[in-house]
Image (cartoon, rainbow, N blue to C red; front, side, top):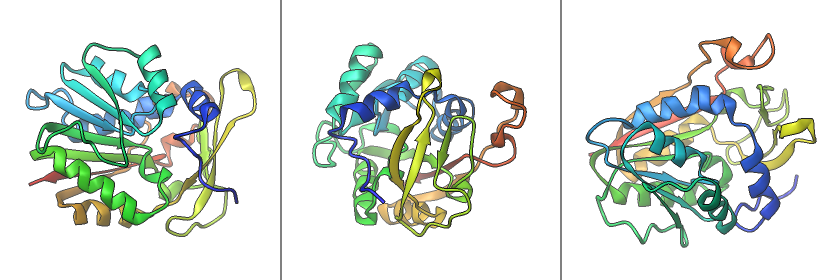
Length: 247
């Protein structure tokens, strides 16, 4: 197995990830995350998108509510794509420096989310550092939600992606191959991420100080919204959303 995908330095990966049609995420994953952290609530005026990638999620947050969005990532290429293709007057794209959100004060954020961040980190200690830094910048009472591919359906072929090999079991942190469909029917984008069981998410958030932890595994409610007659998303939950509140 090759090493993990180098998101920070690889231009082709950033471009391929931006080209990926995140239809299942739009229909199932992102609505659940937005609801978990209270997007649209008058109390949520500043939202942190930690690991924003090419800005797709940040743009959708800005379209869904009137909040200011701080969209942060470690990859300069991802941020270049986000700034050029998804500029918005209420979205501030920032580069993360050594995992720290130096541009945010303690307790300055009303809600935070990380989409496809934990699965791209192979070290539990680093996951804990990320969760602790996000906990620092959140105000008391604010919620943080993590969205990742569901470890319980690793290997299942969903409409636009597959994480892991069918029939194979993965241990905590083990590398796995991910295939993302690309437009035009060409070869899929191949990535390497990490398998984390549900308990890892609960442990990391709890140790960082989050409480009232919740776990969601949403299913597609309208199978006709995805191509094909047998969308796996209608019977096998493709995503895991774990959230908690800062007391």
